[in-house]
Image (cartoon, rainbow, N blue to C red):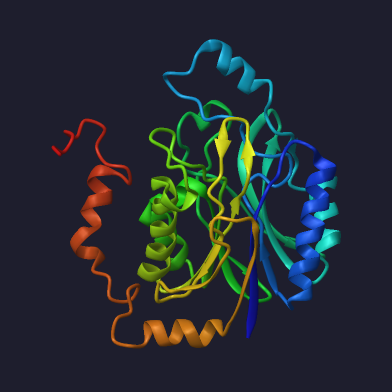
Length: 301
């Protein structure tokens, strides 16, 4: 049996406060007997204060670029400090990775022995490319609790991303987010926010279509102009929510028998990965690429 905890929590630029929050969540997870703790995107130093784009003024752009999160090395002292705090607990968290002068929105899974796997965000929404370089691959990796994959935020909107990890043997996918409320027509109650609805649909769909364990973390509270929807959750391979925080910050925990649950989901006559017909639809990717033809006409309606 494997016990998994996932957090909806608030992280900002104050690094010492980030460490205190991470430490408190590690202790809560450890007290629950957790083997894995998944923390949000941008744990170490917070996310971007706003999401830019074509309509962003030059003043707003410069203000945003002056307030970027600290860029940290994958092998630097900041992540070593978290690894020491983790000990035997496996911890997945997000941070801004430095590679020379280049920045990546990144995630890492580690424990007291060091880094088990790392990832650089592939899909960038709403001007995030103005602050980060784009990642280029999805790769699953082995851990003491099974084979894992990682995604960050907007990645969950792309079925191909989760499918590539599932085909690489991932039994658990950790999806780390700083997922905000809708930018327009925002609802008064978080429960009614349409971007929160999307977040939840994507989580359940990605778990179900790949028949694996999906662990979705998120930021909470506010940062800059962004308000986050919380909604951290653990989803089983049938798309069922096993534990969640709802629209409040907190820690959700569930105990799962990974091999048994994946076996039941995939052995009941519908094995989604095994029943694929790639010879039929391979041309979609070969001809159009993953994102489609840039000159494709918009659909009506």
